[in-house]
Length: 413
Image (tube, rainbow, N blue to C red):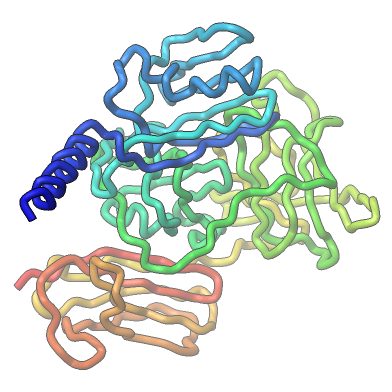
């Protein structure tokens, strides 16, 4: 019996030693592909390595897989592998930060070490480009991920999609994926920790289109197609002169195309091509660009600028589709009653639901067909069973067939 206890004690001590020295590790693999700029993060790193060797240590397997590889952070610091040596001043990798990587061969970077804690806080700078790593193992909708600071979020950009508030591209298609990097812009200096997934979601990455070939660059212009004017189009591409600069499959509207064209010193016209299958291509005659200052679509040339959103229709509209709006509840904080206001631009099925901080449904306030208009509805701090809920942070979600909006509120008793 004494020998057994001694053995258990020895094993426990050894286990504690391994944990303390970070030898019991998690695993993750970062991959990169030729002609693509991958937006990645390193949620798992052996954090005990010397600072000056961290980047070389983590990327050591790259040396045997390619003769060219570069990694860059948002401060324009980079590390470059050229044939037989490393160059550049990026000497340490940080799991809170995101990076852009590029290579000329398929590269797989296996990672082992300690994963960053899910509740780690990240600092953000106002009106700046914040490249942040996503280290939550479950995929998350953009609103759920940034729920803590959602009122201050201006835009979020990714390798797969681009989102800006009050635009036509639905936020429910914007999903954060473990091990990727996201560029977020906020209107105030703030910090946050990632939220909790509320909606089960299957992540979907941007795919290459076999009908069109294009090469990526570090920055892009998002183009949203809200109306093709032709239900038979299978794929759509954007051209600058004779060069394809972006393409996408047509699965549902709006279609978002991330375009990698020249921003300066280029007089080539921007135009589109439709693909119908069987190598049948067509160049549409006209397209119309939405102009926010006059709330109308006009026929004009496209001007590419980094991360400037462009909304396109191949049918002429006088006015863009009105926006769904959810206003802040009042009062907030409240006890025990608050009023939620929202506006519907068109008739349709809606659902207005209260969730707690854990993402659990508390109460459904409205569900069903509703006419267009402005509405106010009161919540009396009760759940679906009529019981009073406790103090804390709650979220209200307005869901329609086209879009889902969220707001945060605080119940204080």
